[in-house]
Image (cartoon, rainbow, N blue to C red; front, side, top):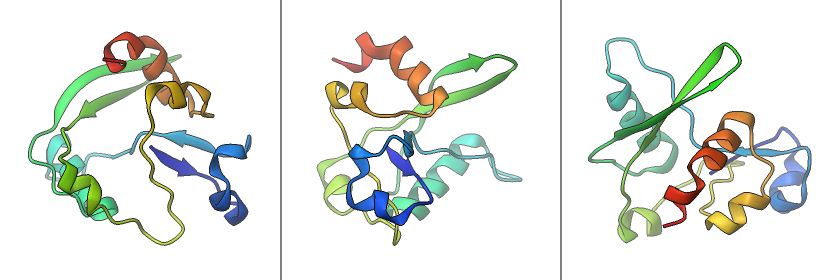
Length: 120
């Protein structure tokens, strides 16, 4: 999950801030690329991880807007060698921990709607 906040002090104690919110990585489709290729490119740019396969999971609708969610499998090597840009907080959480995070609305709806599947 990625932490979003403009207050640099939040990065020292990210779980203690009500002002910050966490979300899954967000990607917009790049011109002349498929959404899957755009995801692979953005994830590599943000984390240094080169995904091999991206799969669509679901679409989440809130009011008149929607977001699509995709997944990819990571290896231990991917996680152990992940890079982070300066001032960026990327973190992995158990589902129990995710329940306690301040999530942005689409991420929250995704977790609530898919909790039984994600908890496996």
